[in-house]
Image (cartoon, rainbow, N blue to C red; front, side):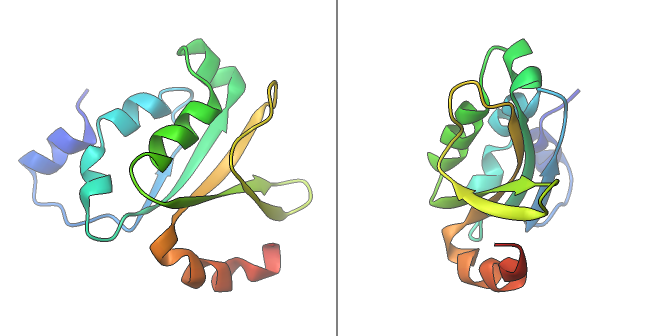
Length: 121
């Protein structure tokens, strides 16, 4: 196993504009090994599963993921409600909330992304 930062150092890989992360609770390990994503000139949009059942097995919560990303730059977070087919802006999850799939959108891309997803807001 290797981190994304190590892989990018060993291979010719350009900047990422979109990253999908659904690794059954190991999302925080991924983020800690992907610091170069946040050092890019244009930070990526991240679609990440933030599920309490999975994260708690690894000793952290979905809010820790939001906090980690927010510390690395101004991001907006959109919770995906698959049942109602809606997106809602969130700052975090209420205690005991089971979590959700979340779009993490850099503030610099917010207007462009908001226009693209406006029918779901």
